[in-house]
Length: 139
Image (cartoon, rainbow, N blue to C red; front, top):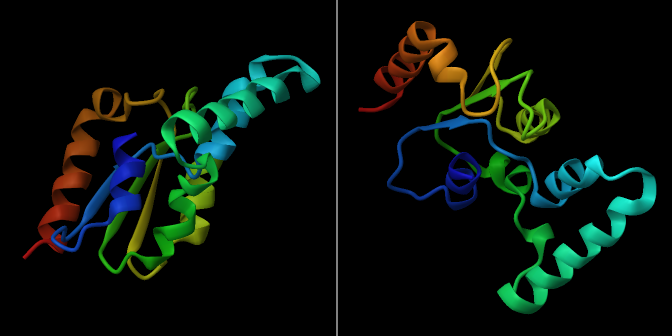
């Protein structure tokens, strides 16, 4: 949630962003999560979740989409995602990268590791890559 949230917020006082395993949109994520139900049976759950969010939380799930705003980022972004992520499919990272500003975005694909384990399973290279990114992009 944190990586997607910082992309959505993109506050002006931030000089660079490292986004590890963000989702592209909650709408797509709902479809991915509820795919554990066979065939058409996922659709009532998706519809009810959207309705609940609209009625009780006061917003539309379709509005929570980092992919819609990532192209507006003017600051350097390091996008990190594992191909083996079981919670947020790799396709979300691909969609985010496609929508991003390629002049300021670096896409680092992690071959192994699950959601949130990129650091623990690739500690040395992860720390080196992130540290280097921040040293290069923060004055």
